[in-house]
Image (tube, rainbow, N blue to C red; front, side, top):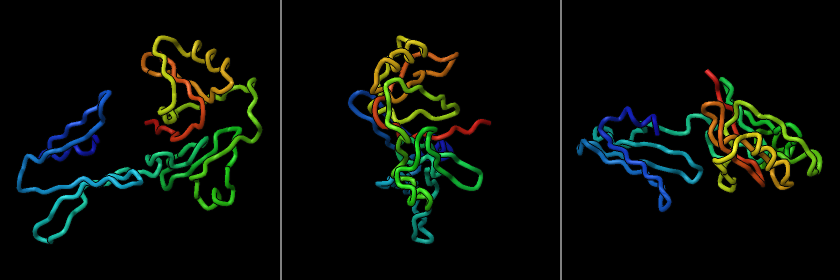
Length: 189
């Protein structure tokens, strides 16, 4: 969590390998007591004990934007962070699954196709977007975007494809089959 680097009285350790993904922190100043809360909704909060007021003070709360919450807009839609608020939009060719809820800014149900999918359907380009959740995606680092597109076009279950790495003109291939969730626009600048 980059925002936590400013707390120089904490040592952070993030582990990610085939066996585990974990985060731990240790206090270097033993006179400071802190806890790190993670809610079922995916919010994080760093609290430090204030002995004078006998209360926990919130030092950091994440995410800072609603769009950073996992799958904020449901499937086949993307979250767009505006200066004053967040909003969800259906991907082109999709419409709100529950229009009444959508109008009330309840975007959890996401969007559905306006027409039944056909194998010969074309793909639209979504630029300046964070990739959808890759939990069920397939990655092939050996091929480029053109081969990736051909693989996807020849698989009627393919719902999206992208470069696995966008640096230096792009390389590798990610292919999704199934719902696309957790998409958001990326602020540029």
